[in-house]
Length: 104
Image 1 (tube, rainbow, N blue to C red):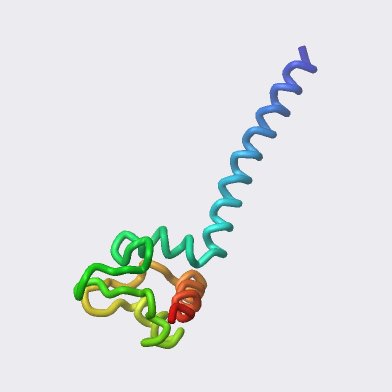
Image 2 (cartoon, rainbow, N blue to C red; image 1 turned 90 degrees about the vertical axis):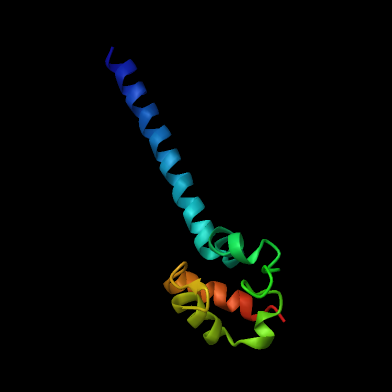
């Protein structure tokens, strides 16, 4: 009886550990990938292809030719025009700003 209980408990621990680990890995994967962060937080307005939506939501296809990394990060953090700031913060904002600054 003790062996069965121990085996069951051990199995539950492995299952819980595996679930927690994969969720944490998924968060880490997104946090390190600026394109995935963009897709999660920005693409609903700016589009999956950075195309924007007319004059109200500008295209980001060549944003790096118009704005520096620092200026892009400032917009991400504080907003501009119709865009509210704060969708991304800290390191996430810096990663996406760097990625977007290379779009020329």
